[in-house]
Length: 168
Image (cartoon, rainbow, N blue to C red; front, top):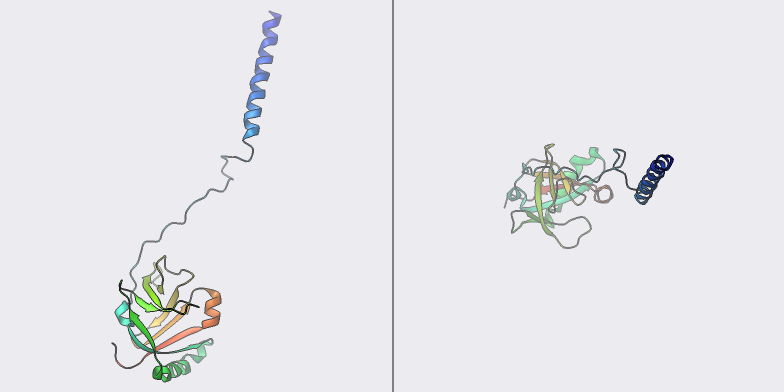
């Protein structure tokens, strides 16, 4: 009987040893709630912009300001640029053809709305992306935009487009 009493602790020790080895092989892996889990950000439903692409197509005088107090003066400067207008073209997929920051060649950009009620002009992707510009205001005659990217916004400032003549 003595040998069966001794066999039990030895068997328990063997099981404990095996569990320790298994758990030791799993170091670094934890299912505890403190482990950060990879989750994807929820996809915002696509919201149509309140500005239509055809409202922006045409020739525009362009100027920029850094100080909001300079807005009125900058609008006059933009109107004076109608001698050499910036052209916003119609895209083939329903967007507008404009330049992205630091790009020499214009490309088709989308008008995107956001759940917060803002409008953006930029490449495909969620509204407010790094390459987008936010539409600060638009009344049909004056379009004011600012790039979302802080560096581009600093370099290009707040851009004022004033329509040159009647709509296209």
